[in-house]
Amino acid sequence: MSMSKIRESLFPIHGRKEVTKFLLLGFMKFFIIFVLTLTRDTKDTLVVTQCGAEAIAFLKVYGVLPAAAAFIAIFAKMSSALSRQSLFYATCIPFFLFFFVFNSTIYPNRQFLEPSISTIETKLSMMMDGEGVPAKILNHWTSALFFVVSEVYASVSIGILFWKFANDVVSVREAKRFYPLFAYMSSLAPIAAGQYVVRYASQTGDFASSLNRLTIPISMAGIAICCLHHIINVFVERTEDTQNLPAKNDDQKGTKKKNKMNMMDSLRFLSSSHYLGLVTTLVLGYGIMYNFLEISWKSLVKRQYDDPIEYQRFMGNFSSLVGASTLVVILIGSNIIKLLGWRVGAISTPAIMSLLAIPFFACTVVLGVDDNPTVLNAAVQIGSVMILMSRACKYGLFDPTLQMSYIPLDEDSKVKGKAAIDVLGSRVGKSGASMVQQGFVFAFGDIISASPAVMVVFYAVSAVWILGAMKLSVLYDAKAKEQEGMKKD
Image (cartoon, rainbow, N blue to C red; front, side, top):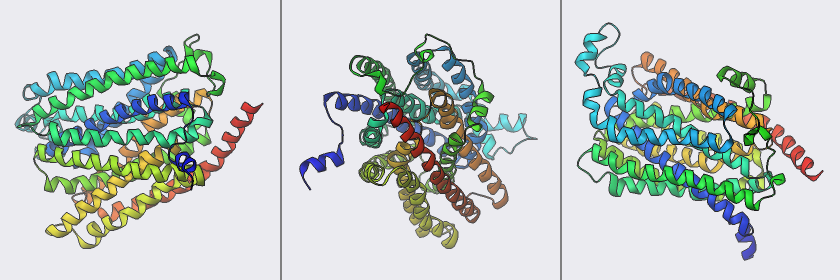
């Protein structure tokens, strides 16, 4: 194979303008995922070590889902009143203000803000046990709040802040080469964030000092994201022929106002489109399957790492491994999408997750982890590989194919349908899985004892996801060909 073919396979970006555009967007995604990694590991450290892994199921239903719904309602109104650039800043900046305020004000004063267990038992003795998960969440409500905001940021940052912006400035022709490769740079973010946690942030005597060390790079990354957004907009306006980009209406530039659209309107808009319904199936599928695996795995990890600093250090190393494995998946994934097409790329994620879950369920269902340290350790290690590859496939295969599916759509579907799918859709999947897991906990005692039931639901969802991806691929190919034909005309 010649060097030109090798270069084309690894980096099919051509010309100074294309390379500059790709790198600017790539660095923007790097900083977004850098913050996502730091906040994700921090929220898990706070909640799992203080309230237990089972608290995640409660928070995703009673905290994250309402917060996501509220965000959709606010975002829909803002999208009707603000220009694209103003909408980006109005969505991005509040998250970074919260992270700063949490570190500087909320967490240092948590002892004065949070009620004690005895107070909770006295006031709510008829409603909950002081040793139960709900009581622990109330006892550590500031950590629960950080968890909720970080979860919403995880959906907003990737789905809206980056991918919506990328869809606005990247043409269909460029997307086939750009999108699989964006993860090349973004996969470096978990490596950098994880090692920052392991080698610096966790090298303190208490978690408060560690949190302060985490907030500094989070704030700096927030500034970088806003600056890159401005730079990219200026670059595109000066160098690009806007006719080659996805069509944009005048109201998007702020010359007209869109019709106002509340949350229910967004949901009705979503349900009216068979295409968007299938896209929702993919998002729900990943949310449900990953959530089932994640909570079971974290409940096992908690048994080995009770101390917040030790848990934080473990998650830091794990995040670095996620980034490294994502690089490998991207090398494979970019060529899968380019050579084998969108359908194979979309089906690969549920297929890989289903295969990797087999040995994990073998440990929890067949062998059993209770009073068996050897099997417990094996389950933690196998689960780590399973979660690691699930995340790597998300960044390297799932995200590129999902975002490519939006490009052939009209602007209304991109803005309103995408916001509903990326935020509310993913949260319904995760929250729905959490509600099912709560039922399993009540029925079986704990999530590990419920592993047989978890396994059945997991593989049923996998089958629906794969079927939905196959149906969507037919519609996607037809719309992509239609859009290419319009450009030629």
